[in-house]
Length: 403
Image (tube, rainbow, N blue to C red):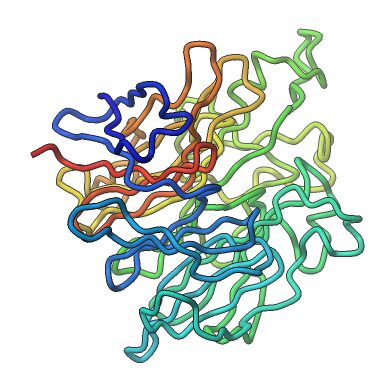
């Protein structure tokens, strides 16, 4: 399907025709160009907020007058790597919660075109300024979610690919922490989650689901006489360990950095057993991998799963609306690149359980294996279209049913 691009937005990579593969009956268009577009949130008025961590700002995208191009303006600037954006009402009053690399702040929502004063809710979270990390933090961007009990969940991702120091840090890194809506009563909620960027509650419940980036360059963990034990075998690394979609439980431990889900059992990507991590737990003395909480559903390794949104109850058309959409940013260390797409995880058994993922939007990879775009987040607009952010090209796409 050719990507429809307004004439005013045809700077690279749209200086040449681009195509994306979408379901039959759908069309895809460039809605806006927003440099560095990461996470997005649709405002109560139907506009769009877009974070740009590198620029320290959040942009507001409003429809243009008379069918013209959307208007993109700065909503707030001068922040510390702002990332996730979540609207949440407390006692009927709407709030915008916004994560930064070192904390979470909130704004009483007024609908104004620029941000009002904010309230710091959580402060002092670890980032690259944390002394013990010496300026290096591999996944310092934070992600958040709020539930029906007005509880705030914050993902504190790992500082590294795989390291024991994160598991014994205070606060634990590679974990989800729980606070009340004003930032009090902080405690560890779940751990063993290397980099959980997509956080979302299943509609109408307090079930928190997360999309997780798993580790890279996993050495072959089996001393099976093949001579591969402890070696980094590209064909093995390509598919191990999977990224993850997990329904969390309070107190859960999902393995990282000591245990890795293995997709090669009879259950495939569902309910995977764990293998000991060769780098951190090869003799099993640091963690019992048999005692870890199983991953709900694996995602192709190295896909870099990021934004997650449930489509149930939105205006996105059936039957696709009985599922979760996940943006995959794409691999960097796989022999054949993967990811760079948006997948749909249909929910079955009365809308309670995920089934195997299917592709929703693909095609951001060239024939040479390079990316011309990299999806980050997804959200449904008031018209029932799926908005997709892309930080590589600085684009917001709109996937909608064709007329």
